[in-house]
Image (cartoon, rainbow, N blue to C red):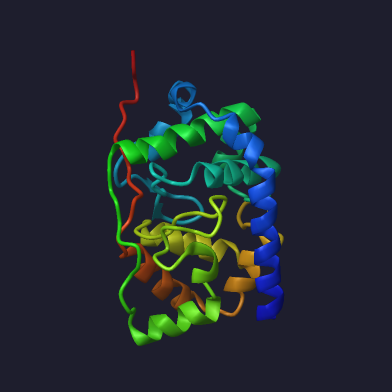
Length: 221
């Protein structure tokens, strides 16, 4: 099973590197700044909490990889990620809109600073076993902040409550309003209990991060 997952990871990474080149060239951060009105009501408020399908802090996306943001929005638009609000927003965006918004948030994180160490220290033994079991660093990098391909997310320092909710969503099969249909992540999280997923989320969320929430006014001139 682990060999099959490793092969899938390699194939997806190669495909993302080839297929994402044209999208990256089309990104315009300045244009994206004018297109984030639907985003700032949640992602522009520090500590803002979502209530569906459970209570968790909405993810920090400033400083996140632009290519990953585009991939996530595309999955919401296609219904591969099931979240009614996010799907409605993603459906309203063109491919160009997604690229521009993604470029804006990636650049916004850089503008706000936040360099992190290239490697993390040794995790607690129990957590180390879980990380090894899930093969997490093979995709997300040794410090969980430099994934092997920018279509994968930076995880370090992300809100633990969000990471926990996201990990659990990959265990949901055929949900109509919740769940995520990613074959790699589904295979990774399937062997874990919720208690183990929470351990992973709490640990990864405690690491130094480049991610942040940059407060933005709801009404702008």
